[in-house]
Amino acid sequence: MYDVVIVGGGVSGTSTARELSRYDLHVCVVEKMPDVCYGTSKANSGIVHAGYDCTPGTLMAKLNVRGNRMMPKLAKDLDVPFMQCGSLVVCTEEDDRETLTKLYEQGVENGVEGLEILDKDEVRKKEKNIADGVIATLWAPTAGIVCPFTLNYAYAEVAAGNGVEFRFNTEVQDILKKEEGYCLITNLGKIETKVVVNAAGVYSDRMHNMVSDHKIHITARRGEYCLLDRNASDLVNSTIFQLPGKMGKGVLVSKTAHGNILLGPTAVDQHYKEGTMTSAEGLETVLNLVNRSVKNVPRRQIITSFAGLRAHEAGHEFIIGEVEGAPGFVDCAGIESPGLASSPAIGEMVAGIVTDILHPAEKEEYTMSRKGILNPMTLSVADRNALIGENPAYGNIVCRCEMITEGEIIDAIKRPLGATTLDGIKRRTRAGMGRCQSGFCMPKIMEIMQRELSMTPFEITKCGKGSEWIVGTNKDKINVQAGGNAHAGI
Image 1 (spheres, rainbow, N blue to C red):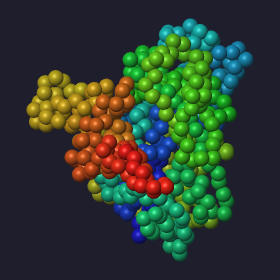
Image 2: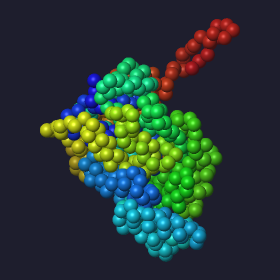
Image 3: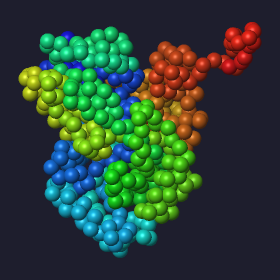
Image 4: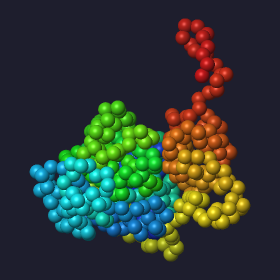
């Protein structure tokens, strides 16, 4: 029996796992996908929100501000790309100045530091491409941007290094209360545990409702994004928001931690909890709305689009705590924006609840930091040449758009909780994230995976079972049982 099973391998689940890994506990993270970072955590804005737009007194406000303050040191400890670039909320109508002022006052009440309201002349000194119609902005210098993939992987790698077990491709189908603890019924058998942490994202309501008479409902809120090439990185310096509405913080324009420009998201509520499709209408909506805050957006620099799902709870509040009537079952539900910014504080809070239940001793030895994948381009020429001399794989460029080497891809595969899918390599190294979107580098990456993971080409997937990249060869034939012995090439 485990002491703790965490359901979900996103930033909330893995941040909690990292915090719990400092204690003498038998902890397991259960994830239905083949890797961490496959749900909400894989497709979001990467914004470390300052905390001015959360309702004062809410858990969301408290954890956002706490997480924001923790992030600079955390990013350094975990070797995660992070920039505290600040954010602006734009106002384009005189009638909206009062709303901007309320945001400022709300932020001050929440404890956000350094907030200022800037007039149109002041903001144009910061952002040359601010839209002509902008008359005032709220400036939040403590806001930042982080790489959401790297943060998620870093939490998980530290947890694994301290003894936390990870079970992938394991889907929880039912949860049964026992005299002591819970039995999780999964597609791969039963798992028994004293405590359950429900960090299942858009499925957290399903997990909660298996054990509680007080039902909750999580809506999958889809947001579509466009990503611009790094050639457009000088479009903005900070993250630029529009005034928030009832569906969220609105469409933003922001640098990513790696220098691309991100536009989006939309906000569409849907029943389907796997629906990450994009649409021509949604993407056109994004491109039209960004013109309200930023001008000169270079549409020709768009290299890809994607959609993510937010776990929206009707009260727009984080649900964190031991469930009434289900002792030892701890919710970490309804974690939508600012969930990424709040994640270190969420992990801290959930771990505190668990340790209050189990009263474990702290380990004598553990580490809460890690070193990320080495990027040879950050080294001096002399050091890079020395590295290549020791390991020639670091001299073999596989992804020309992002200048990612074979050595980095091997590291992504071989490190703790290493990549086993194409998406896993892409998110860990950025191989395939450039302008050609893996058009040139994928065959070479697949060759490396075959060699390092002893896989056949037919076993390599984009994101797990059902997403196999190769299903046959040009010369193969299949027997089609439809009115005769017809044959078709694959």
